[in-house]
Amino acid sequence: MKAKQKPYQKLTDLFLIGILLVIYPQSVFAQDKMLLRYRADTLLIKVHEIGITEIKYKLWPLDEKMPLIVESKDKVKRIIFENGTVMKFAADEFSDETNYTEQRKTALKIDPFSILFGMTSIAYEQSTKPGRSRELGLGLIGLGRNDNSEKNYGILIRAGYKFINLPDFYTKGMRYTHILKGEYIRPEFVFSCYSSTQNHRHYDYNTNTSYYNNDKYLITVFAFMLNFGKEYVFDDIFVVDAFAGIGIAIGSETDVDVNEGYYEGKYSSSPNWYGILTPIEGEINIAGQCGLKVGILVGKKKIEIK
Image (tube, rainbow, N blue to C red; front, side, top):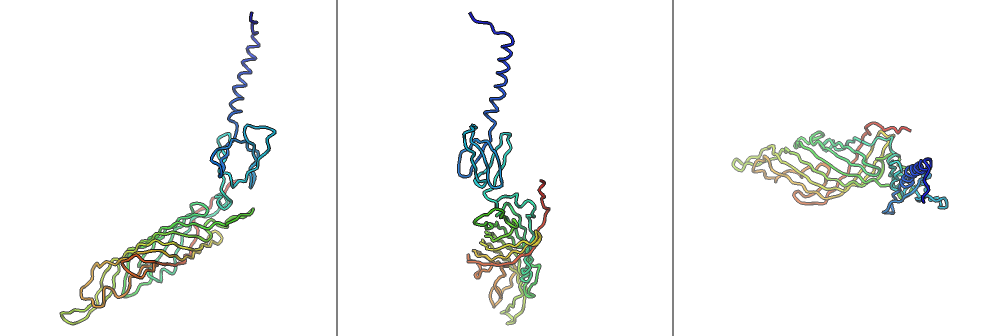
C-alpha cells in the first residue's frame, strides 16, 4: 500500500523541478564560442581574460581540473559570447582597423606635371581596409599648355586598386603611421578619348600650290598598367605619391575632317597618348608611364569614444 505524499512534499518537489528547469538550460547554453583561423570547427569555451596579445579560456564543459588555455589573438577569427555579442579579431596589428580610427582615409591629388603636357589630372583615393585602397583618376585634356599648331580636347579616365605592402614581422607596439602610407602595387585600367585639331600643310595638285589647313582627328587609347610606387603622408594632411608603371596599350587615330592632298603623310607627328608611352599606332604594344601626385587628405576624423 502506497504512502500518500503530504501537501508540503508536493510543493517541495515542484519547487525543485522548477529550479532545475531554470538552471539546466543555462548550464547548456551559458558558454562562449571561438572560431580559430587554423581550425574549421567551432570551439565551445568559457572566456576568462582577453589581453592585449592573447586570450585565456577553458574548454566547455567546465572542469576545475582542466588547465587554463592561452591563445594568441592573431589566431582567433572571432568570439561569440553567451549573450550573443560578437567580437572580431584582425590577423595582425597592421590589419586591425581600430588602429587607424582617428585617421583621414580619403585623399584628393593632382599631377602638377600633367599641365605641362596639355592636361589637368586629378585623382581620388579611398582606403577600403588596411593595406588596400581604390583610386579613380580623371584627366581633362586641353586644360594645360598646348602647342599652337595642335589643339586637343577630351578626357582620360583611370581606375586602379592598390595593394599596399605590409611589414613581414610585428613587434609589440608596431603599427602603420598612416593607413594610406607605404610602398604599393596598383593594377590600373586607362582609357582616353579626345579630338585633335592639327594645322597641317597641304598641296593642291591642280594649282601646284601648298597651303595650311586645320585637320581633325579622333584619338582613343586603351591600356592596362601595373604600377609600382610609394605614397608618403605628412601629419595626416599632405600626400605625395610617386610611381612608375609598365603594361600594354593600343591607340588609334581616326580621320574626322581631313583635307586631301596632304603630302607629308597622315599627320605631322605621333599622337599624344597623355602619359601612356606607346610607339606604334593601331597595334597592341608594351607601354610605360610615370608620375608624381601631390594632394591633401579630406574628410572628418572618426574619434573613438572610450
